[in-house]
Image (cartoon, rainbow over all chains, first blue to last red; front, side, top):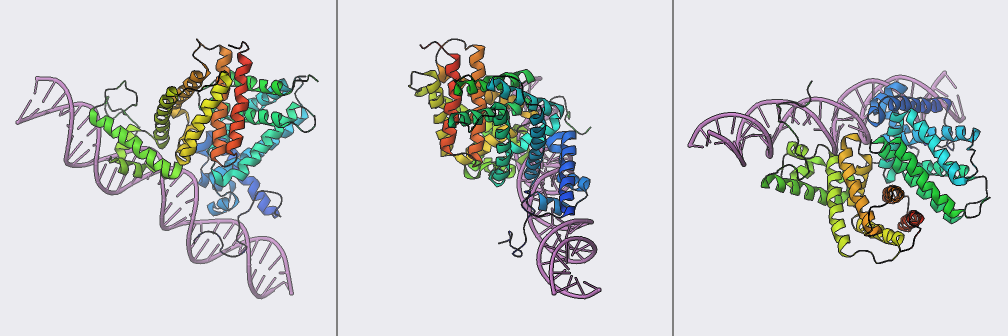
Length: 212
Length: 212
DNA sequence: ACCCAGTCTGAAACTTGTTCTAGATTAGCG
DNA sequence: CGCTAATCTAGAACAAGTTTCAGACTGGGT
């Protein structure tokens, strides 16, 4: 009986643009994410300490928790942020290859290079993503949808993908995440990750027999 | 300057059969893993609390940490344990299908069913596995090798696999881990996991053009 | 039987994520 | 302006992983 419901309006500050945040609140949220990114870039998952994030962002610890109910939520939100930026960047210079499978591989390798530039940040975000439990599933799902969109974008401007293609995309996403983890934990080389990505992308050729 | 090196021999108790553990030590290790499994089966990752494991196993907290330097190490070792058992079980009744890809899918689905029987235990082990950082890479690698062996076993009794086949197996392993995570975190159904496994197993057909 | 090095125990201490509380501030509203 | 609900702040408090320490115990060699 100690959970929520202090008063009918007591509620966390959600992320979506659905809720009308005031100017100061939006600014706070931005400062928090910015501070998180900086700390994560410097020292990875462990360096993102809630007290430090709060101090760097200039908010009280309790406020930080009101905006992001856990460290995992915070890092997953950071990943959303970064993915959105990446998506924007990739849109500007889409992959050139004529083969859809190659385009997807190219796109993922570009994303991978982005992560290589900030390995600590990548570490923090990916670890949070895979460690997340059910209480974060909505947010993780958002990240997953963003990633799916990224891959579908790379596959081509075509109409609605077939169920088979969607399955292939799911498997590609699985491989992408897991390969990233093996790289971050030092068990696979960059070259190995590239090979895995290229290997799994063959599944796309399997599902698009007709050559455009 | 406060780290290790108390005396030239101060050292953790490693896992491998390389070190000659005394009878009592082997028993302690067994009790610890057993206690871990029980606690994990009951409540998943969070229920495996180091103090409780120590108490249930009848060892001091410090001893637990001497055997397993972190909660993650402990759970990864538990996974090794379980995988070994599973491997034994699977060897006894190998998959029947004539198609290698189908055999692999069958094997993984059997493993998946085993996890469904103890979802909390699966949760604890898989979360530990993907959360593990570099300090656990050796142990995680062992688990990975066991998994690879499981898949290769299912593929067939043939000679040394080609590099292409090994790549396919790597991707299958990635998909297996990641699909498991999405299931455990409630973002994918059992049916969805099956589809993903079957989809990725097609890669095997791609690398074994000659039908036996 | 005695001794030494290495191990184990019990308990306290430390760290970092998370929760809670009391009081200041702010936003919206009449 | 003056009120009220909601939010924010500072800081204590709590939980669980990890470390540390002094003393008891064990096993092997002499």
